[in-house]
Length: 282
Image (cartoon, rainbow, N blue to C red; front, side):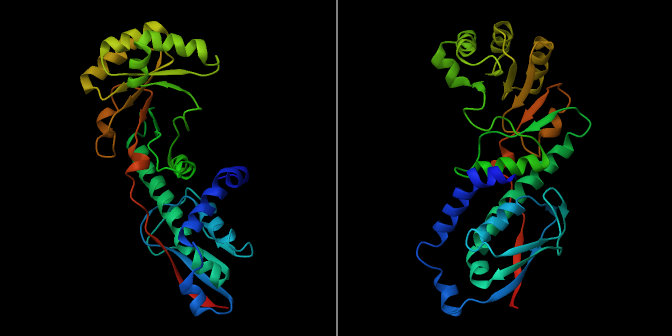
């Protein structure tokens, strides 16, 4: 995560997470440390996976004390293994103890998403299909979860300002596929692609004829998607969506779509088990 994104988007959210965990004071830490002192702890991996979010992990500590420093032995995107020492954390013991849970929460969540995404991407190896995420993210966690996906895969649009995606309710509100596309073309700048969600072959046909740039095949059967791809015949990019998980994605690899989107990358990835151990005074 670059420094600009960290300062503009991540810092306020990390600070809120720290404020949620410390509404007044860290009673336990202040009780055992009436006077602060310097210490050192180790970041340990307890499960095989892909690490992601090291800068965010570190920022949880440095927002409390900018003199805390880190010696990282891995970088985002690296494979990590159970029992591996990932980093050394050095500085104020008060800051280390008070930021530990928030820092680990971010790192475990982001590493879990990167690990799950990597696993799903590997199932599409050699197919030419691009795996992307969705907007099904945890509120106020999108910048972190979307970044974690990029460690193993690619993002769909970031938010509602990022692109035109005409879903079922937009189409209903507009009065039909063709009308929704026409309205979007008239409103949106020409540099933005227009994507349309379709559920039937009639909707696919209407979207193609109206000039959609991307056609999403949503919750269609395998055979219907094959028919839809043939109907589109290269006149638009194609995306498959609808309850796609690690368990069923391989069955979609032969239908000829350009993209497969999966909300599971962000809403169902388990955390990667990590811990901060062996804290001692120095």
